[in-house]
Image (cartoon, rainbow, N blue to C red; front, side):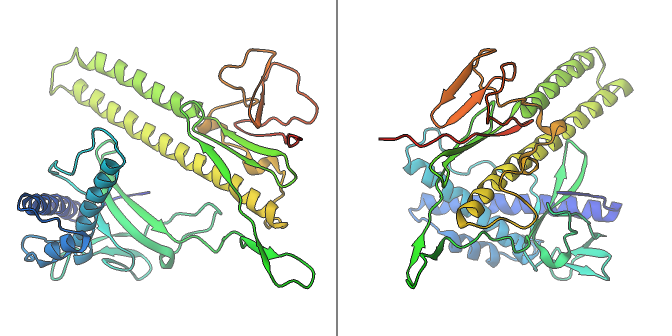
Length: 372
């Protein structure tokens, strides 16, 4: 997600296109419900063909942007049917009309880079385009992501940040995991398939806990601390309550009322950025843990890293909070709590020999496999 700045002409053009995208969604939704009323059930391609058959005056957008509207509606219907088949209560098919919708540009269609300095977003044939500077961002390895690696992108308006943002998906470098099979050795030509099974438990205090059996018969577990997310939400709620209390004593339209409303929007935008960064860090650490397990099982080590390197699992204290020693929520000071294969030790108690502690992400020590 890259914040972008648009000139006044491009700003008004983008706003009009977002409203047109929402009207196209409403028109397509009305057509689908009409088909349901007469006993027909249109599929994914039927919805797409209906959208593309509409006249250009009705869909003043790029063809792939209009197709994205059709596919999003078809996916929403398919998801509702799947949830209903699974017996989930409270499932509703799409029914709400929209007044605003982001613009979607598929990979290599609807956008192009000119002169290595301008990004041009198309709104359809013989229509004015949206031109903005080429955004620059880096991947997790710190390398600049060039436009040849870009895929689908969305131009979104953030009411909290009161600005535009470009959501760009990009193709990562070739960091595939090793093969899931290897020769058994000797003169045999057969291959032995190795499967790495990892149990994932999602929670509230700890957003993710991963556990698996180690190759030597022990157990490996990773607990990710989620108190940073709760702290960000608590700060947002307290700040919002304080601003609402001040705003209730102001007359609507006064300068102080407008300033307090702007401060509230800025607080919400800042919290959204913190939560987004938090979610990215959780998935990144879980991804690193799984990759280390696969590399270890394959008998190889990834370039520039070690199997037991603590820095590979070190978390950012500023955005993730602090979990000094992987304390279990129900552990008492000076006591230990063990649950299955994952062992926890309180930070105030002396560390047992062989135990390891980390700031916010902790890999528990291996335990020998139970003997018969």
